[in-house]
Length: 432
Image (cartoon, rainbow, N blue to C red):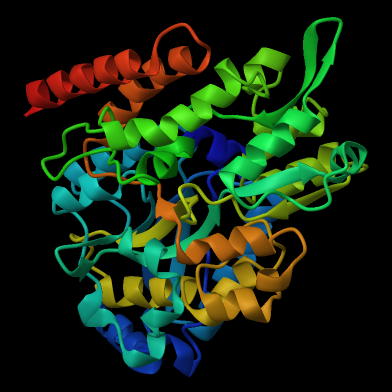
């Protein structure tokens, strides 16, 4: 999932949000700039802040460069040295932090945040924040993803939730007048939309990604958990299986859903664009992909259907965080508060490649009312962040290995999930 995000969005919502430190909205502007100057012994002597991130599309890179230029224009005594770490991003960051050569500010995915916070290498940011920075303006589930023990270690720069992408032409042909709003309605719609020719399915009503990053909210729909308070895998519980069973049954019993590989597609957006699925659950990264590769496709989006009477979706987000060992913390905060403040975030998200984590910016840019992106933005207030403690990588690998077999009917769901849970917990115990 993470790889797909960084490639498609670029896919994880790559590149970065940047916001207004020069205005009163971002707090600590003038005083912070003065302090940044003093760090080098005089306000006129420039401070260079290092910023590290992963690669982005050329369009996103241009937006980031524009935002960094706006920051430097407003803070002439602070220069930003931006470095792209193209390969093995987290391994490189961790190695540099251990070696005392980490960047002052860097990107951190919510997926990786708990483990890095636990290692004590991130600077708590609460003491830097002023009321003008307005933390209440962030979508709270996204902000909470970077908190631990009441302390804030990062501010989210951009995000995407999962929304329902549906083919308008297929819906019209099937006599479906509106997107389904409940899981039961989704099942009924997918049955009508599935096309069989010569005994073979040529179009599935519903395209599914059988992986934990897409199914975590289904585990939670009936009260299940991915991990318990001790960090052990817990997804084989009866409550967790209830949600997963809904997904598996549409494929194995109803024969109205399929995964991309079953139709020769690489991911859900491609499956949808090729007309091999009438409905998929995807994020903001799918929008530019579809516009570039399937410009004639008539599609709409809607919030995901409720499960067990509850709204749910996944959120994928990345924050700016500060190296605890940075020698330029005031200047680093000036940069961070600009990148995640209102003006900088507006610049960074102005083209829609990334979506703003601040509600006011989403409203100002019209994304909350946008015909395509409105449903993606709406999910931010109730989404489940892609995060479940420092053991999530181990839990994810074991879940994915077994769940895909259950989805394809190669094993029973209960047996597969119990095997995955037991194996994950053995690995977690061995790593302690």
